[in-house]
Image (cartoon, rainbow, N blue to C red; front, top):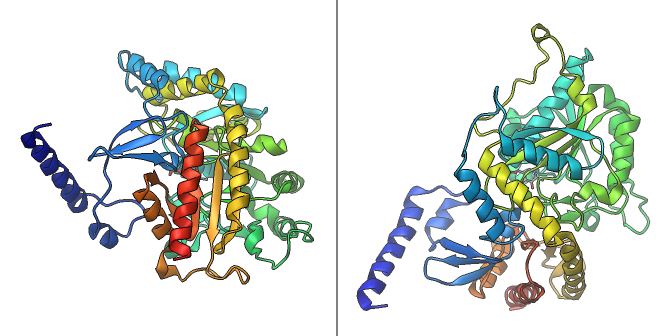
Length: 459
Ligand SMILES: *Cc1c(COP(=O)(O)O)cnc(C)c1O
């Protein structure tokens, strides 16, 4: 490159960095802090790597926030999108059908737990949750049963950022300020064994947290429309992995007390846990299954709320009876997104994606064992290609680092200098690479994380 071109690139890059700071309000970001640093701006992707505007490559350790499954610029998905663009980019599902939305519904219904039969489209995880909440609420009304107006959720839960989803959220830091705007919920303990709310020990507790949940259901089931849960792993709450048998027991309790169950698999769906859906691990069939993030392989925003004939049929009536589900979005069932999702599901078969995840999960598990020995790692947990490493100031007392030290953020920053993009959830370092990551790059990523943790916590 001649000097003139180099200078033009430098100038463009500086412009982009300034314009980003001047014009864009980033999600979940203290913008004062952002404005004081140089933003990392991504320009290109390939496989499990992202390239910034200076041509530096980074491992995408968070799958571009859970969504990427088969890597960036995956040939088959690129091709499916190009073909779909030449036919139709968008047409509404209000009053019309479109071909890719039908093809995708058929495929989804052939792989979700048996008994889930109706697909309602939307565009992101939060809306898929809103839809499940509204459907559950209206289900009881439509059946002429009054009083079922509250929901049960877990502490540390995360179901999205729209107000309904925030109502059933349980992360104080994100949700507390909005409390006056939110509807009524009952909160059950999170099965967060490392920091048990009931002060018990997993070896001897017999999951006493379930008893607390049962008390709520026993006393209030006639006021409750549904229970909502992230199956197996509470993601944004800190990659809290639930003990075996917990999900199945929750399902049994909802059946016993005749309360609907919403499984929010927005994060854990599409192979993350080593099975296509987390509910499969415990043979659970929920009344609603919410899916988004990985659904299009990380290409386009799309979500579905899948429910049963039982729920669906409660909405069937003469128009004048007002039992219609009055809900929909402009881009509902977008053909491009659906075509990408169909191509992604094809790849699961063609590339044996789930088998690959289970193999790499083994590597991740041994690494978790190894790092749990580090002097500031309180807990290292994971399942499939999901993991969280919780850092603590004092290991014996499980004493957290002071909030303002931003220890997680500092570890992630150090990892970035070594060519890996990861994000913290408070003091928990989260790991969720694209499912297609090579074993070699997974190992590399884990080494970088271990070294970065040591650098920051043992310096
Ligand atoms: C990310 C997430 C959501 C929200 O999805 P968005 O697409 O960000 O709106 C909902 N539930 C769970 C479990 C999630 O991880």
